[in-house]
Image 1: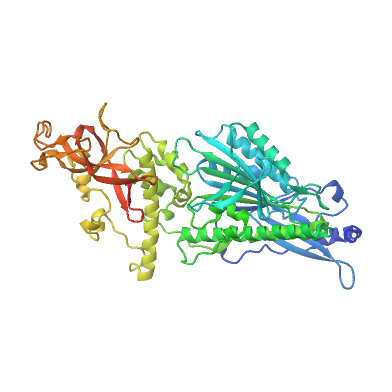
Image 2: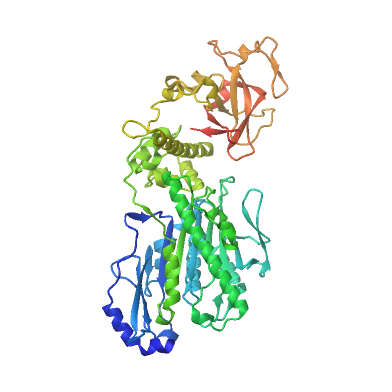
Length: 619
């Protein structure tokens, strides 16, 4: 077949010049589902061994993301004919484009995303010999320099592990290729049992470990490549945030997938190599289904459409099982993914090149073009940047979180997608804001979004308002008309006019306050924010008094129970202790203390969550 291509090279070039190009395919009235998934193609230059063959794959001029692939076929009668195909991805890079250009366009944004606590994933896919490993190696170097170079804000600890997946077997490439197990723990988290994780502190150290892993990776000689990758290699960078020990770590996956092969590469394969090729194809097929399924699921959740979510088969393969928290629909982590498809433009390899482009094109998910979102004062997903910032200024508590620092450019929808650690770190840049306030405000933003989606769903099922709009309570009083005193799950003062007063002027039973014990306080308390629930003034207790949590007797006639004006100066309070879950609290009603008003710092709002049976700070 190669002789056929060489003999008809001039005719092929002439046919390509005269070819009538097809328009790019995209379902009418649709748009890409999400910008968190980017699919790009890279066409490498011809090598010295291929120079006698004409190029058959081209990036279409003046049409971004469109690739034309031309194949020369033998005709039943007459001269050879041209078969042209068109494929569409998000971006196309030609032989003249550098790895640095690809990094700047689509990979650079993954670095701050993982640095802020999100999950970033970069896949490199393609036929063996298409420049896949060359591309991922160059991008790994640029990512390492960006993460370890000191240009990113904040202190982080970076850990690296690199594993190899070969069929049903897994190996640690940083521990002399020792076998490891991929297991799921009791919390549903995939663990690489037996894999070593190395703490790295410099770019050189990280690149040295990547080079070590490359030496241990399994390769085989093929007709196209003397060192063809026959396994999937996963480089996992875990980015820990020391200032937020309970926050999720950021993760950056750099994945060099096993090379697919054309028919002419397989003609001399042994039965073992054929089984290996089938296993590679199966894993890539499952990967494609997972990427598409997760994209469709995320889009359905974000726009609140459809109860039936797409199935994501991440448990069907070792590769997707390792990446469970990227693909699991039940996961809550924010993910950004880039798929780099590498293409050999040689006419002799146009068939596997077309298969690679078809694979890349199938990863793109399209949804019907949505109507422009109408502004809804109760639905953050409809807010532009100006509306989002106005809401932050009015609803972020005291001190107010700077909207300029939290959402400099983000719309409501973009802020909802921000990784939790990044959201909270931005909040903490405002002077006086505590970690508890930052966490509570993020919960408030999400609760507002969830409430709006639920209300919209109920409105749709019941017909909504007269104009089809969602009807929301206009004030706290209106909301509380539908909630009995027994059902209230928040410590907020129900009367809005009273909430405007300083909290020390309106202390009441059920109020939650943060307090600072005096020096040499005799009772040991948990570190961090110290909270109590006010029960009653000490002066209003029964005649017999009570023992407090320190074992001391307190009574209504003790000295200092009231101030000079006759107002309560001490209150009997119940301790609020941290729960077993991060950010959760529980009330110890029978662990009571007498707290001076002068020790009280501020009011803190607690909300009860029936699902977890814990209290959480609100703003």
